[in-house]
Length: 213
Image (cartoon, rainbow, N blue to C red; front, side, top):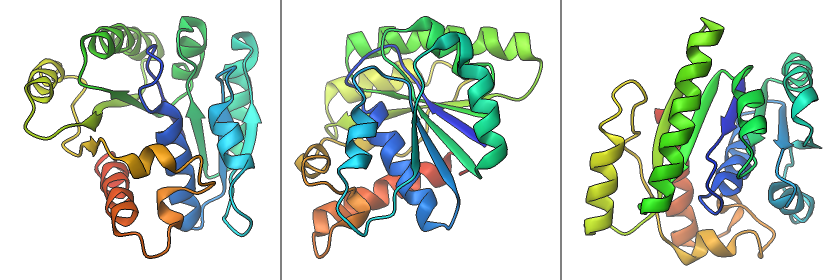
């Protein structure tokens, strides 16, 4: 399966989500390729710096949109799962990954800029679904949320207005432990005795399960 985290907006937790999905799938004894399409290489650096003993996916940096679809298909034949960290601001890479992806996951923060970028991404997904005439499932999900806030309520209302691309019910809260994980050379699944990290790890696990992974 090829899973892509995609949104033209930067800073909406695509890399965080991709790294955590890769780590979660490794815990399920799957072979995993993590494809970093972002020139900033956030997910590549994160995985490279993980503490010794933490299972790592095989990382591939692929930033050429002309060759990307073909390379993803090849990786899909070698690995149980291919997790793609989509590049921000690149419609070419977005289109190339969606051409071969089985599942698109669109993270969005509850902000006007994120929701505007998400709308553009959803339009591209619909176009791709029509062109491929095959199954490309897609879901949106909210990240860095503050419970019971006006922004959260407004964002939910907007994303729920797209019935063809459902909003997942699991939301990823705004928590410092998530922001700190990369600097600690861990994922949320690798903390020992940290209740906050374990709780946030369960949020991601529930998110991935709801998406059918």
